[in-house]
Amino acid sequence: MNKWKVGFFLLAGLVAAGISAVIVLVSSSNESVPFPEMNALNMTDNVLTVNATKENLEGIANTYIRKAMKGEPIPVTMKVDDEVLLFSEMTMFSLTFPVIMHFDPFVHDDGNLILKLSKMEIGKLNILPSAILKVLKDSVKLPTWMSVRPKEEEIFINLSEIPVSGNLQVRAKTFNLAEDEIILEIIIPNE
Image 1 (cartoon, rainbow, N blue to C red):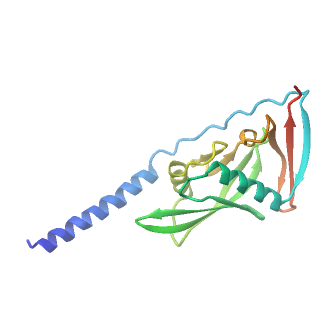
Image 2: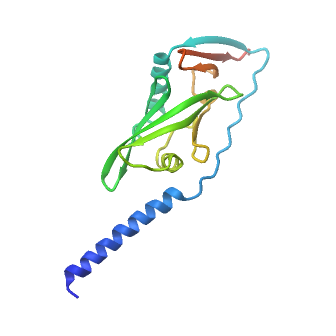
Image 3: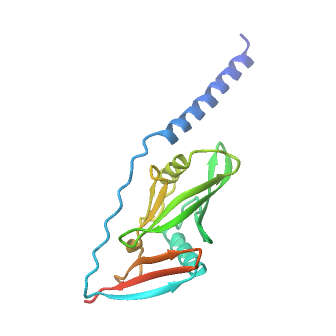
């Protein structure tokens, strides 16, 4: 057998092994991440209600994401329109693909946000959303207040853990993007 045939089969085997490794990595265990517990509201605490617009929320969210991800190689940006969009990128085999994730936001019982994945765009690729969320969870160091839950196809945003000055806490009361009605509560502990 000549050396070119051996080289070809060796290269084909390496490519097949690489693709198999990526498939195994992406499709491995999708264990569910539990919701973090929020501190209970003390009845003597003061609550400041804030009405925000989509633009306000987008600016604030991107500021906190940038601060929390300083120095990370993969950018994550949020856009708030009639849905919440997360923009990022994925590199596979030296090719970079734009990733756009579309989420429908819901207010959890404890005042935190759940971003339920509704649609995903990765160039022209058709990949399971739970697999992409698993790759996002495993490869991007997201802020501690963002929990990726691949099995549920959602991202949990623990508003109470966002570092606001002092010991203030934030929670969502209303999150209606269609009506541009976003009501947040700032909890000021009564010390």
